[in-house]
Image (cartoon, rainbow, N blue to C red):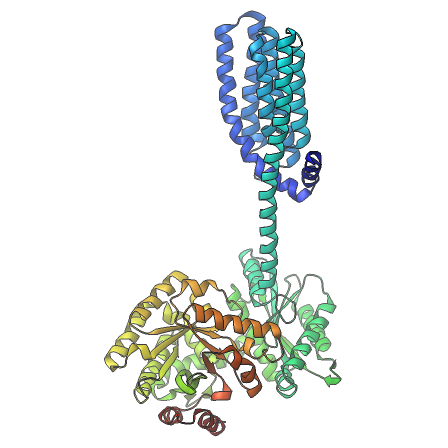
Amino acid sequence: MFFSRLLDIHRKFVDPVRQHAMAKAYTPIIRSILIPGCAYYAFITYRHFQDDSGMILAMLATISTLTSLSYYFVRQHVLAGPEVSLKRLELSGLLVNLLMYLNVLSYLLVHFEQTKIIYFALMAVIFSTTGITLRVTLFSVLLSLVTLYLFASRLPGELFTQYVSIGIATAFASISMTTLLRQAILRQIDARLLADELATKSRHLADTDMLTGVPNRRAMFDKIDYLVQQRRPFWMGIIDLDGFKGINDVYGHIVGDRLLRAVVERAKAMDVEGVTFGRIGGDEFIAILPGSMNEDEVRQMGDRSIETMSAPYLIDSLDLTVGASAGFAHFPSMGSSSAQLYEKADFALYKAKSQFRGQCIVFDTAEDQEMKQAIAIERELRESNLENELYLLFQPQYSPCMKRVVGFEALARWQNANLGLVRPDHFIRAAERAGHIRKVTDILFTKGLAEISNWPEDVSLSFNLSGQDISNQAFIMSLLGKIMASGISPSRLEFEITETAVMSDLEESKAVLESLRASGCKIALDDFGSGYSSFEYLDELPLDKVKVDRSFVRKVAHSETSREIVAGLIGLCRKLDLRCVLEGVETESEMAILTPMEPDLIQGYLFGKPMPADEARKLVLDQEDIPIKVRAATRHSA
C-alpha cells in the first residue's frame, strides 16, 4: 500500500499541468532556503580561514565559497523568472543537495569525527524537502545514507550497528516526510486546479448565450473592448432579423426559440476564418470581422450571410422565412471606442432596416448626413417647449396576493411639434448624448409628483433614472427637494436603475443611492438578468426591489430552466427581504405557471398596458374588481 501511494504520487507528477503547478508551488520553498544557505556557507568559509591552513584550507574554503555563490546565483537568476519549469527546478534542487553533500563529505574526509557522521542522517531529512521530485529525493537520500554507512563501517561493531539503525530509521522518516509533503502539496494543487476548472466553466457559462450556445452580449463586448484597448483594427456588425417578431407572436416562443437556434446554426456553418459571431439579445446578433477586410469584402460577406439566414426554415413541419439586415462600422476609422462603434453600426443597421431592408449597410461619411434625424432630436431637445411636450404613461404593478394594483411605473413619452411622437429610446439616448437628460428627468419627475398626489396613499410611483442622473449628486438632491416640497411621503417614491447605469462607477452610484434610500425613497434594480447581470449588485447596492427581466418570464411556459431561475429569484428576493417584480407577463398561461411560485408583484400587458394619467387615476380609485377593470383599461388603451 505504501509503494502504491508512491506510484500514485509519481503518476500525478508526470501530468504536465500538475508539473507546472508543482513548479509554482515549490519555487518559493527552494528560494526561501537559498538565502539562509548562502549566508551559512559564507560563515563556514570564514570558519575555515579561522581553523584550517594550507591545502586543506584551500580545498574546504573553495567548496564552501562555491556553494555560497551557487546558492545566490540559483536564487537570483536560475529561479528568478515568473515561470520556472519543473525540470529547471528539479536540477536546481539536485545541485543544492549535491553541494550540501560535498561540503559535509569533504569536511569529514579531512577532519573525521565519529559524532559528525550523524550529519548525513540530518542531510537525508533535509533532502526530503529540497529534492523537488521523487527521483531526486530518493537519489539524494540514498546517497547520504550510503555515505553514512560507509563512514560507519570504519567504527567498532556496536557503534556501526547503532548508525545502521539510525540510517534505516532516517530512510523511513525521509521517505514518509517526502510522501506526506507531496501529498499535501498535490491536494492543494488539485484543489486549485479544480477551482480553476470550475472558474473556467463558470466563465464559459457566463459568456455563452443560453438559448443558442454562441457568445453572449457580455462576451462579445469584452472582446470588442479588448480589441479597442489593443488598438487592433476590426469591423463590428449588428445583424437584426426581419419578420421574426411576427413569427414569434403567431407561433409562440417555442417555435421562435427553435428558429433562432436554426439561424445561429446556419451562421456558424459558414465558418469564416477570423470571424466571431454572437447574440446580444432577442433577434439581434453581432459579428466581429478582421480589420484587414475592405468595405467591399465586408459588404459581400454581410450580404452572403443575410442570404444564408434568409433561406426558408423547416421548424416543426412549418415552412418559415425570416429576413435579415445588417449594419457595419470599422475601428478605428469610424469610431474610437466600443460605444461609438456600436452607435455607428447601429445607425447603419437602422438605415438598412428603414431604407434597404434585407441588405448589409456599411457606415461611411455619407451616412453622417443621414444622421440628421438624431441631430434633429438633439436640436428639438434644446429648442422645444419640453414642459408641454413631455408626458408620462403609467403601467400598473399588480399584487397577486392583495389582488390589486399597488403602484405604477412612470414611462417617458415625447410628442414633438416638428418630429411627432419620438421613440423613448431615441430621445433618451439623444438627451444623454447631448447632455439634456437631467432636464428631461426633472420635467418628467415633476409631472410624476403632480400625478401621484391624486392617488390613494398606499399607491406608489416608480421612476427611472439614467446613469448621468445618478452620477450627479447635486441633481439627485434637487429631486429630493422636490419630494419634500410636495408633501408626498418619500416611501411612495421608488427610483429604478439599471446595472449599466451604475457599473461605470459603482462606489459613487452606491453613495448616491444610499442618500436616496436614507431619505425614505425606495431603490429598484431594473432588467435584472438582461446581459450584464451580476449578483454582486444585490450585495453592493442598497436595494428594496428587483425587477426580473421579461426574457426569463417569456420562457417559463416551455423552459424548465427559466421556471427554476424565476422561482429561484423569487425565493432569493424573499430571503433577502427584497420586493420582486416579474416583468413582461402577457398571457394567462404564463400567469398560471407563475402563480404557484407566489410572485410578489406582476407588471405586464396581462394586467395593464402603459396608460394615460386619467386612466391610471380611475384605476386606482376603483379597486374592487381589479383584474376585470385592469383588462378593460388594457383593451381601452390598445
